[in-house]
Length: 187
Image (cartoon, rainbow, N blue to C red):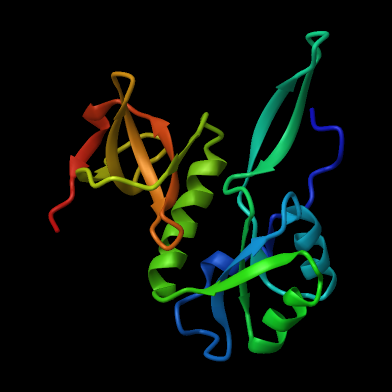
């Protein structure tokens, strides 16, 4: 059980359900924060009604005495995704919590990747953070909790994993999966 109550990681709740091009005055940005400032920035953006997504995962910490504490940690350390107009981007910069802001070159692809990550996190499966992605076989999950997800097969220590990536950041998360649940994507 987390010590603190869970804070919103997606504002508004329907942010990732929007259609691409629905808000022509807004853009997707990957906001790289100063060290350990992701949640604080999310709280400030929430105060100002600025749409954002901060993917959080459960993390168990064990103290020296063996006590286990659960917390919610950002999936991508240092990153928060902002969907805003130029004035909202500037508002984020004025918080003194931001290191730099990167505009998404392919917002439709980023939105697709973020939707898949949200589904992967919602399944509450143990995730492994993957960095600097290597090319593999593109696949789709046929059935099960991850049905419909598209990703890449990777092998880690002899186990098959489904890698869901955010190409824009060249990072992603993977989950162990049985290969019989996968079907190749014809590109």
